[in-house]
Structure formats: C-alpha cells, structure tokens
Amino acid sequence: MSPNSDAPRSLPSEQIPSLLVGLGGLFFLLFLAGQYVFYRAQFGLSEGLAVSFSLYVIFMAALIGGGYWLGRSDLPPKRYPRIGGWVLGGLLFFLTINLAIMASWSGGTTPFRFSWGLWAANVGASGGLLVGCVEARAIQRELEAQRASMRAEQAEGQRQWFDYLNGLLRHEVLNTTNVIIGYASVLLEDDDLDGATESALERIYRQGQDMTKVIRDVQVLIELTQDDADLRPVDLRDVLDDELRVIAENYEAVEIETAVPESLLVTADDLLPRIFGNLLRNAVEHHDGDRPRIRVTAERTGETVAVRVADDGPGVPAKERAALFERSDNSGATHGLGLYIVQTLTERYDGSVELTETGPEGSVFTVTLPAADRGEAVEEANESVGESGETVGDSTETPGESSELAEKSGETTVEG
Image 1: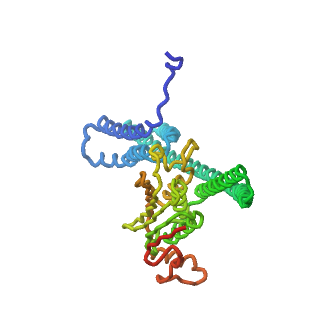
Image 2: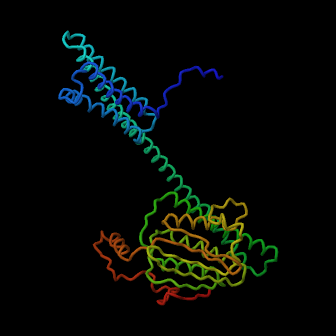
C-alpha cells in the first residue's frame, strides 16, 4: 500500500458541472419536500404552490442549465474548481445575510423561514455560478490573448530569422557557388587540359550545379514557411511554356512535346513554376539514355485541371515509390528535395500530385490543381490596376500567347 493511499482524494474537476446540475435538482426536491411537510393539507396544484414555485424555478433552472452548459462549453476543466468555489461562496454568503436578517426579525413561521432560507441558498448559488462563469471566461480570453501575442512575437522572430537565412543563402552561399561554377566553366574551355584535371573540373562543375539547385530548393521551402498563400488565377500555359523553354535551353538533347490548351487558368501563386520545373528536371536528370523525351499535357475537367508530365526514362525503383514525395533524409534516395517541394506546393494550392504510371517504358506524374475562371482573372487584374483607373476587359490578350513553344493549335514539339 502506498503511503498516500489513506489521504483524501480531491474531487475530479470534470465532475463539477454534474454536481451543479445535481445541486439544482436538490433544491427542487427540498422545495417539494418543504411544501409537502409544512403544507400537507394544501399540497397539490394550488395557487399558493404555483406562486411559491415561480419564486424558485428561475434560480433552480439557472443552476441546472448552467451546469449543463459548463460541461459542454469551451472552458477547460481546470477552471471548474474556481467556478465551484464561487457557487459555494455565493450560497454561503447570501444565505448568511438572510439568516442574520431572519434572526433579527421576530416574526415569521417555521415554514416561512425554511422557504426563505432555501430561496436564499438557491439565489446565492445561482449568482455565484454566474460570477464564476463570467470570471472564468474573462481569464480564458486573457490567456488566449497572451498566447496569441506570444505566437505573433515568435512568428515575427522566425520571419526575421528566415529573412536573414534567405539573404545569407542568396548573397553569400549562392553567389560563392556561382563563382566556383564560373571558374570551373572557364577552365574547362582550355583544350590543353590533361584527363585527370578535366575530370576533376567537371566534377567541381557538376557539384556546384547540384549545390545551386539545393540552395534554390531551400529558398523555396523558406518562402513556404514565411508567407501565406496569396492565391489568384494563373495562366498555366504561360507557366509551362516558360519552364519548357528553360529545359530546352539547358538540356540540348531533350525532345519536348506539349498539348496544353490556351488560357487554361488555375488557382495558384508565383511559386507555381517550381512544381513543373522540378518535375521536368527530374524527368531529364533521371533519364538513362542519350535523348530524353518528355510529353506534357493538360486538361480541365469540372473544377480541376490535370497536368500530366510523361517521360521515357527507366521508371521509379519500387523501393523509392512509397516515400517518393517525402523529404529526403540523404539515406540514398535520388530525388532530393525536388519532389517534396512539388507535393508541398500542390497541397498549398489545395491540389495533389501522384505517380500515376511507372515502369521500364517511362513514368507519368499527374498534378491536379483547382481550376480558375476567366472572370476571376479579369477581376484580379482590375483590382491590381484599380488605383490607376484602368480596367481590364474580357477581351484582354493573355500574356505569352506568342510563345515559341505555344502554337495556337495547343500542341507543339521542340527539340533542344
């Protein structure tokens, strides 16, 4: 037996609302008992009983209803004991005052004094419950306000830290990496390099490029943690054209085929290109052949737009598929942060991304995004130029319709 086994156990806070309901019921039973004992001859449905009951019922109902409400309110149970203390204190305080008045008054029968005392206890308990609940809610609001203020201060501190970290990556690490890549590129142009030196420089160049990608991915993650999404209609055709142009310029051997309708709008923000840039680079960099082939198609169905990025690579290994979109822990996965960022961004837009097909003949990634209407785009544009008094009409041309990759037919093939 433990040394504290004989110690009195405190009442669980969660039971206090039920006790308040029980207290209201007890007052009701005492009222009926008093009526029966003292007025047995007249006990029943009489005018006197109705008048007496009306003096009690409001405060009885307050206790019963207040206890029921308290148990289902958003007040935490740790506030209940203080409310219970107010109920007990109110009961004793108001009853004591009325008992003192009764003691100083020589008139009144015993039944009258009993009814008076019962009424005083009922009123005092109900008043204490009201004061206790009001105080508890005030304390809770104050605590929530303090917590909100602390969270805001922490968020501001994190934002400043992320701003510093982002600036450090951009101005120090990224610039230094670009200098390394630049010098390696210049040295590689020397035709007199021996094999070992050229191999070392190529490795430096590749590692520098990889470091640049990681830095940019980290910058995207920092942006995602800093800002709330400012979503608006974005022309998907323009975004895909720009990203495909970058791929065609950076990877000379790639073959690109697209089938994307004009003026296909989705709900997104300025980070949308990162989704398709990562998917396209992933398709090229994990290709095991000399001439990667990519096909990008998009189609609106109802309230969503589905974009399919297909390649003819070797497929995703079975052991990597389960955690394909999870953040890499550098334990051997070959997709790094790229696909993790893709999933994070699609979820930011209330969309999704999945590996819908994979095998020796290639893989298909499908990105689903919320569709936006032309009217929303016009309204967004009007708001952005409202201060200058200009208006964007429904006939406004979509930027980028003359893109080199975007023919009016909506389908084109580009070889890098």
